[in-house]
Image (cartoon, rainbow, N blue to C red; front, top):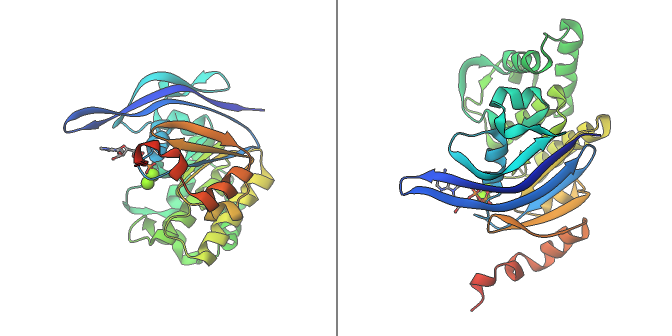
Length: 253
Ligand code: ADP
Ligand code: MG
Ligand code: MG
């Protein structure tokens, strides 16, 4: 069993006014096969955590550690993180004109595995994964992220996750901008990967809606740059009913 461990992580973001502290001591341990939901109000630092794990240059780790089975993740380049088995959906958020989805996926797979996938099984795997996500075959010939709708971006994320078979997947706001049908299809994709592998999932979300489809084993409430409360799936139900108000002491009149 593999473990992704975040210890006392402090992160600042670079702004025009200088470095602004956002994460203030995040502690989180994710084992393979586990799904952890991070839930929290807007601006609490959830995406900052995701970007920090992804190695985004704007986010400066000021203290703390992130390890994958004891290996220092923060010392790795973005590519090395992917090869170590970390999947960060927002890693390639930009448009890549001229690079088709099909070529992009094959290049990523080759980079991560260290060798090109066998062509016959690969073509079949891509086709099956796309059908599962109700994606049109023509999608594979489009340029990466060029003119993708919100829903297409999310499906493309999950398509990558299905094909790259990561050890740990960090999914930030996978539910945002999806209608109920798309949400169900995307969630089924995540659940398929969970069933067919030992992946550990960090599911970051503001809303409880997606947790009706993807059942987390653990829920962490994120407030003001750190984990404020932890529990099982019942904590998500509680948040659905009560919202985040009781965590936001500063807003109490
Ligand atoms: P969440 O994902 O929980 O909504 P974020 O991590 O996006 O929260 O943002 C946390 C805080 O950090 C916010 O106050 C936001 O304005 C600030 N922040 C995040 N990224 C940047 C950035 N690149 N430049 C300036 N401020 C940022
Ligand atoms: Mg947000
Ligand atoms: Mg966010």
